[in-house]
Length: 513
Image (cartoon, rainbow, N blue to C red):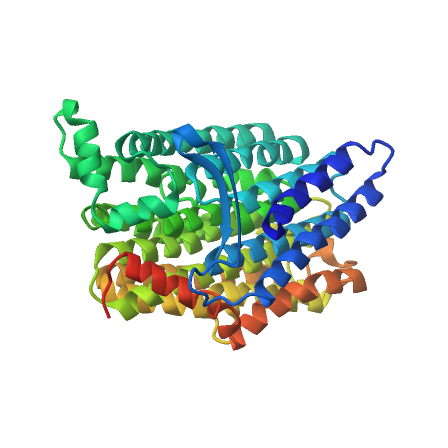
């Protein structure tokens, strides 16, 4: 019942907001913030009162038969990996709602949509059968589209439509792939499919079911894997499926951008680890070279594109593409070679840490950009600022700390995940790691350029009367800064909940010590 409560609480909050027509905007936001604390409390309770190294690895589970004749069940479960993404979802959603109050954006419908989005994300990160997982995956599109379209900037309609169409298009391929698996082996349950894959039963099942096509089983399973990858690649996003992201991030209101970068992109990372890696280990080594080229291109082109931008939001948007490219690279490296268990463990653990830490770091930076945009009356290009450190040293200091964490500065949270990922990728696919290092260099260039042009130099006349952070704004940023510093100094606070799941995944992939 704990897990079912977690899934339903955000939807109940959204329903209460929708049915409370007399609620004004400030009260609606305060109600949504208070309500968003409930899932966070449940997630923390779930993690603190259950061991992560249990025999099954499950902290909570709920299942109900839906279409038993078709082998379809509403099955949800939480292990260490799911718990980490649930924690991230609870934190970033609460952060975005608080940011909405501080930045004076949205109202009752806006807050209700954010809570619906949170509920659907909880479903994505806990569903263990494709049908409920896919329903939650698709349902995230509706509140995301409406939040961008209704509360975004002048280009929001076009950006929201592109986001909707590209994500929906990728999902169609993924649905076709899983329908093929259902016809071949009679199940869409993720755990059952992973067991069949470990026993090498998917290839003969597909070959027998689609014998009339004249295609071999490995080719058919490879085609299914490509379909699933396309659906995940759009959400991650991987080059060239990233075209929706810059405009959506730039046109969405800042709190919604925090949700897009902090949570929706992490759905792709989660899917790579929960679905692609354990279900398709037979064919991924053959697909890995091509996928690795896309991942490295995502890292490098994301950094180059960020370097070419002048709009602060677009700089951070392409920075997100760059950083999530590292996650794709690490997962593909883990799929490419099955020889070095320690390198695989480093790549997978680093990917999970990078997903969590990037969600916090990127959300923090976007919130700071929202503060700059609010104070400047909507301006947010590099040319609109200068010498800001003279007027707002605390704002510049905290924003700079978050950007250095994104750079991977040792002692901050961004360093640990990147270090583990590069350690694993260097051991498994050295050429990819060597090229990706250039992405780190370019990231340093565009972030340091931003710091130099915005924080230093002569004071821009438009910034001459700016106030520094208010007490409420400092309290809003304080938890995010703590979540950037503490995991950087004490990474085991997160790693301990992932170790058992990583070992189980390596065993499933038959990667021997």
